[in-house]
Image (cartoon, rainbow, N blue to C red; front, side, top):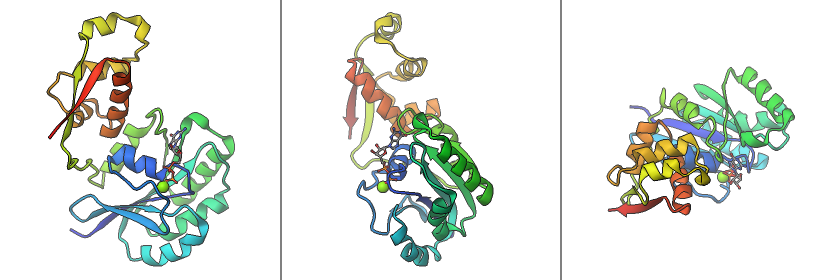
Amino acid sequence: MPRKFLVFTGPKGSGKTTLIRTLLGIEAKTDEPSYYHSYSIGDDVYVVEIAGKPEALRLVQTVASRWEIDTALLVLDASSTISPREAFEYVRPVRHARRFAVILNKAETVSPQTRKTAEVMAHELKAATFTVSCKTGEGLPELSSWLRESIPVEAPKRAGGVIVPALLRPLEEIARDASLGLTDDELKILSLVDGRRDVKEISRLLAQPPFLVLVKLRKLKAKGLVDLKLVI
Ligand SMILES: Nc1nc2c(ncn2[C@@H]2O[C@H](COP(=O)(O)OP(=O)(O)O)[C@@H](O)[C@H]2O)c(=O)[nH]1
Ligand SMILES: [Mg+2]
C-alpha cells in the first residue's frame, strides 16, 4: 500500500493540535512546529501538522511536494479574522492533495468574516466544509466519519493500557437527580458505563471519538459520578 498523508494546515492557534488530539486520539506535540510534526498511525499512514506561520511554508512546500497527500484539512479559527488571500498561503504546500476540507473550528465563537473566508476557500478548493468545536464536540462525529472514508483513523491503542470507567452511584438515582443538570448525551454515556467496557468501546457504541468521550467522562468524574480506572 502506498503511503498516505492526512495533513492539517492553517494559522497558529486555529486548533490543529487540539483537533489531532481530539479526533484521532494521538498524543500530538503541543509545541508549535518549526516546519511540521508528523505522526505515524500505522500501515504507512501519516498525520502531519504543518507550522502555522507564513515564513515556514515555503520550506514545508518543498518537503510536502513529495508526500502522497490523501486528505488536507485547512483549519481556521472561527473567532479570528483571516482573508482568503492569507488562508490560501496555508493551502499552497498541500495544493496537490487528493481531497480537501475546510474546518471552521471554535464554532461557539463564530466571526462572520471568517465564515465568509471559509466559504470562499471551500468553493476555490472544491472542499467539504465542517463547522466544529473541540470544546463542545459539535461537528466532530461528522468530520471523523468523513475522514474515515479514505483514511483509517482509528485511534492507536495507548501503550499504558485502557481506561475503564465505573459508576459511583446507581444510574437510576443519577437520572432522577435534576440538580446534576446532566445532558441527554451525558446520561447516554453513563448508561454504557458498566465497569467492564473501556472508553474505546463506549465511544464506538456512541459513534463518538474516544478522546471526546474521555473529556466528557472526566467532567462526570469531577461531579463524583464515575471513577476512571487505568487497566494495564
Ligand atoms: N474555544 C475553543 N478553543 C479551542 C478550540 N479548539 C482549540 N482551542 C484552543 O485554541 C488554542 C490553540 O489550539 P492549538 O490546537 O494549539 O492550535 P494550533 O496552533 O493550530 O495547533 C488552544 O488554547 C486550544 O485550547 C475550540 O473548539 N474552542
Ligand atoms: Mg499546534
